[in-house]
Length: 509
Image (cartoon, rainbow, N blue to C red; front, top):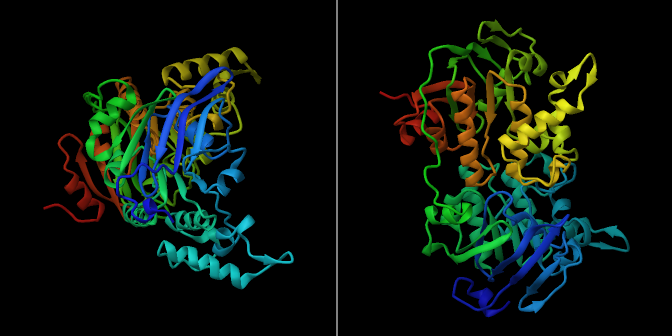
């Protein structure tokens, strides 16, 4: 271990990994155009930028997924070529993505020592050595996860910790984390930060990609901001502030993130009475035409289940759902809910919202077959019309409508989900964590889109785990606690402390 690694937070000229003037083109279009990044041993370095800024492409260059078309990579000051992911791993460079590559059907120990790290002799696995070595890696990050437990039975944060342990088992000295807190609770995030600080103190260089700027200012030492495939600035976190970061990310002053509220009508668009589900218990509320109704609460409070029931994706055990004057039948399906005017944009866009291997065009078309068909024949012209309109209205950044959705940034994937649902012209649009894992610029676009929709008479019901977002985005906020509504307050002038007390089921005097 070098001196810099032993004293990781002391200023040093030592660089663990450096990217100099990296160029990467796809179909002649620059995804990276002179991008730069330098990460020191023993620092947590934030990599920031809007969706489509080039962060994901740069990460893939750093980890051997893509070969750069120009520029230089250096590891500990020496030039290096990363022919593939295996070469990068052997150089101590490991990336952990938002969608963890945990194998759910094998044990924790097997996940940690997977592949070349599996201890064996003569082709026979040494299970005792595997358990011992796996425990050593978990001990490094102070985790007591049972080694024999199937990985699929772990909580999200435990799965993340297993992924960390696997990276450490490969002797990773540069750890690249892509949105590691996206699916974690506040308590789990705190636990994760403790682990990351411990790894930093061991001299591990950590590249931290996140759209949650509050986390960056709490956790990171330095930051690098990218825009349009270029590096805009690198500086100490202590010498920056959130407004400056936003301005550098979007290339203009941040301004107000949330658009002004518009008056809400009195016409009832959706009425829910005594709704029952597995977690949802006796929920009743109304949502008005042209209203943004927010739903908050702690994880497990029943927020997402409520939206699934409303959208027909989960059967209800009791209660009524009325859209305008039309009551949905008790056995309503997704198709019937869509026909009644209710559309859902789910939380898990990659697994529930889009078909990653299919094109933007096909993803939008498949959800709108009735609207693009006549007498059983699908109209290519009608498909082109709704796809062109959707890509334009939502400013989807892509080479063309024929690009696979899996190649898009997270924010643009979310826009595709929105585009295919908005093509149905829903009366009630349900959004489950609509801005999770996307950058601040795209968030602002989605907030503006929501206001445009409600100005046209659409009712939006949005679940969010972020109380400031609920206050800024919504007209009214419902808080759920253990499946029931514990609070219903106007968003204008709402107090985070009051909302949080409702989240914990505490009634206000």
